[in-house]
Image 1 (cartoon, one colour):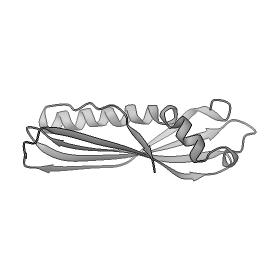
Image 2 (cartoon, one colour; image 1 turned 60 degrees about the horizontal axis):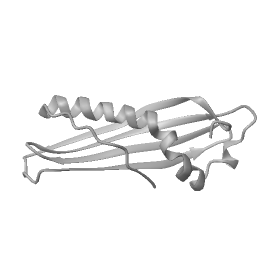
Image 3 (tube, rainbow, N blue to C red; image 1 turned 90 degrees about the vertical axis):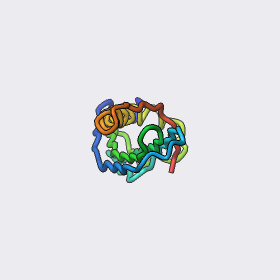
Image 4 (cartoon, rainbow, N blue to C red; image 1 turned 120 degrees about the vertical axis):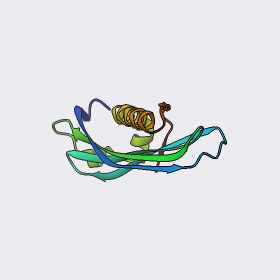
Length: 128
């Protein structure tokens, strides 16, 4: 992957949706990550990475954070010839690790602010 994509990336916060509900007391935490190709050009590829968190502990809420990732081609490389579903499936963890850290940090801050119990989850990416 390093031979086609530069080390520098762009990370954009696209949306945060926090829906609070009365506690149902099911004592569960569920989450889902999604990795989606937005567009691929010769020198730039854009992806969307989202994490949806459903919590029902002392309080109940759903939190969905969507971030964008931009990667840039190494000089002389055409990303349209390299970036496809097979490439993404093989490299999605490496591609998204900085975004997942960013999203996880936001989740910790948001959940800590609203209910006092910071929720920390591990990545579980699926390609959409």
